[in-house]
Amino acid sequence: MLSTYKPVYTFIILFKISLLFWISCSDDQPPVAPSEEYEEITLLAEFPLDIRDPSGLALDPDGETLWVVSDNPGRGIYRITYQGEIVEQIQMDSDDLEGIIVDPNDNTLWVVEERLRQIVNISRSGEVLQRVQLDVEGDIENDGLEGITVNPNNGHFFVVNEANPRQLHELTPQMEIINTTDINFSGIFEVEDLSGISYNITENSLWIVSDTSEKIVVTDLNGSPIKAYNIDVFDPEGIALDASQRIVFIVSDSDRTLYVFNY
Image 1 (cartoon, rainbow, N blue to C red):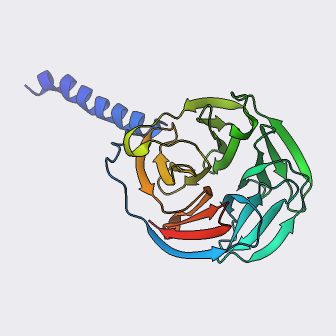
Image 2 (image 1 turned 135 degrees about the horizontal axis):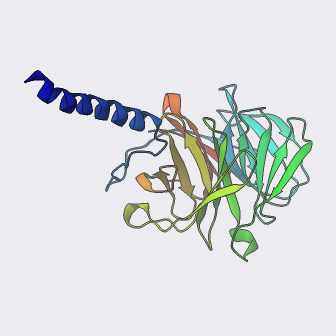
């Protein structure tokens, strides 16, 4: 009797082992059912910024400061405290800066030039190390690239195009576009434009802010919406996350203000 069931028993064991191995090796994210209601978010503080047209926001690895750019030509890049005080300024001969992120490999900066459709690698001293021209759609100059973030787990960058079309681009560390997603959300996720983006390392998700719609939409790495936050901020153009503390920083271009939220 034992010999009759042994092959079946062995097959079941081998099948389970193979299934566990497949799951552990899969890079695909499990599907997440999107929320149908806005998530709760609480305003903790707001701080005025002595920066003209602040746009784009990123955490510094020191855990105490943020990087912000000015989209006013030639104003450059600033490092500020969590209370909005300027720590340093990096001069840059820029056209229309809109996004910024710190490269996890070497702590240099990547900034977005909207009208030029470029992402630019900058040293901490302000030296231009590399310019990358992105082949993205759209003929309206001011509807171009708006935000940039990076997944430190694999070094892939994510860049959003503001409008016409609204798009999410995924790039390799060699700055080659490997995936482009058209953003056409509906319901609570509907947005008129894409203004900034930040990677959430604890959720493995992307947080995208819209200045016209005044909301945050959280997506998976493929650009599918998961949840949304309605924020009472006029003209929000930059977003950065301190995921360990569940803190969201938002910068308003027109109001020249840094907002701090808890989610």
